[in-house]
Image (cartoon, rainbow over all chains, first blue to last red; front, side, top):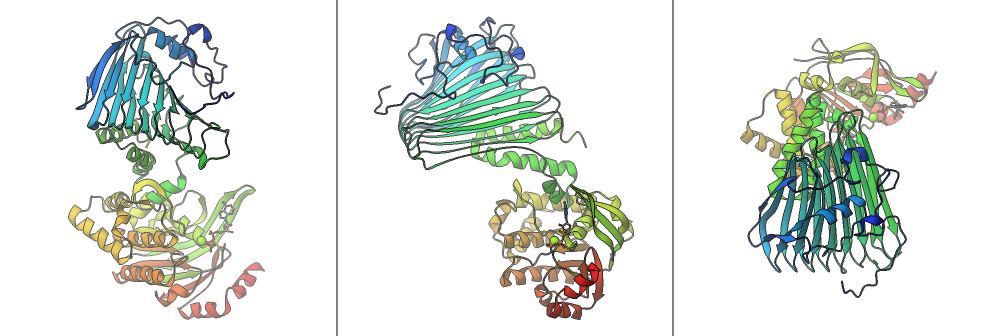
Length: 384
Length: 253
Ligand SMILES: Nc1ncnc2c1ncn2[C@@H]1O[C@H](COP(=O)(O)OP(=O)(O)OP(=O)(O)O)[C@@H](O)[C@H]1O
Ligand SMILES: [Mg+2]
């Protein structure tokens, strides 16, 4: 990347050195900062030596008009285009094991109607899968790409997102896995000059879902919105780790993740890291994570983390909350005759509604609402 | 025909140093068509009375009875009380993020009536009611009470009163925080409700100002968790002139 920006080296735990060399990534013990929340035992050896094989997922592509989707070889030039360098062992192993990549290319200036969907369906195969996807939104293009994951699989993947100058891209990663699935996903976005990326992570299913989503800026004026929505059920571990690296001036980031937890052993982890480098003058950042705990026996960990190396910023803030149903809200609704379970339904829908509105992908809206409804039926409505 | 009867009601709240009794034997009967004003100083327990009748979980009834047309209100859940015909306009209406006013109103109306309102007339009714209360039609799409000004919250409470059409309404300081124009708009709404025959109203207020627009049949002075004196509308004038001092010092002994 040729850039007039001098990105200074920082010594920050937010920014571990990446490496493609597996030898640089020893098998984690679980005590490492980046692994301390993850139940390693349930990773099916992804962090150790578990062999990878083909056929863990079938992939179905539905490309919107004007969007080019192709399979490329493992040594194709597109791999690595985003600047992703694995910072953990699972990502590095998946990088080495992937036998190719799916490349989604939105041509320059194309304004694309509708979404391009890449559906991964787990086949229940014995062996773990290693995936690689590269999404390239060329200059001044506008489009939406949905990656969806369902069925049963053990999957480790790297997803690269390149938003070139002036482009506008929405990427949705929808984890709607079967109960026994394990998914470790590393997603990195490079956001060009005056480009904007909306990255959406929706996690409902799976036994263990761990998502690393990172973004950095290849030029000034870029903007990143990271939205997330999750519903952790009984025994489920859902972990979202975010890192926005403000590597250029006048860039923006806005992170909002909301989740609900229900059932014994439901565990949600949200790590929101933002680094504002010395060069990143005049930036604006805000990050927020809210958890609604619906039953006993759940655990939510929420760790916002803002590191600022320049005093010249427009605004920086964060909020994090873990709460139960608000008695006053329920009382207010019930005092208007609304039955208790209906009142709870309204509150939970309300909790997610503004986020769904922000996600603003019409093709997905109904599905998200329906999923909230069916998640509610599992617990919240059953108990009364 | 409906009568709300409160008899020797004792209520306490849990505090850090154990239970604290707030209501110390309240007795009050509101017959149909009657408007009762309850006036009292800050902290005398007016909201506690209102919340206890509505069934807020924070308050524990330790003695006494509340009945609506002979039915035991205290045995009902919060929503059953509302469906039985009680309505509480709250002093501090609660924000419910992400739930639109129109969805909320329709859900409440459906719950109270036991069936969904006819779509066409309902939309018309809602819009007409919002308009009468000087609330823009765009309120329908906003989240319940979120970002509403103090006055808008109160007008929204009265819009609900008119649309849900209960038997007995308890209005907890619906007048506070309103400028004179909003006070008139709100009073008009309450008067429309009262005139709609057989309605009982318990109007809780700190100031006599609203009583210029809504004429009570009875005025009760509420001090230290109970009714200290009851009278007609002229009792309000006396309170206006002399304040609560006389009652507060009497209650202190
Ligand atoms: N959780 C609580 N812990 C301790 N005291 C409480 C609690 N809740 C209410 N109280 C007390 O109960 C008393 C009555 O409160 P209430 O809100 O009913 O008064 P009020 O007459 O409505 O006052 P205002 O005119 O200010 O609205 C007050 O002294 C208040 O401090
Ligand atoms: Mg009060």
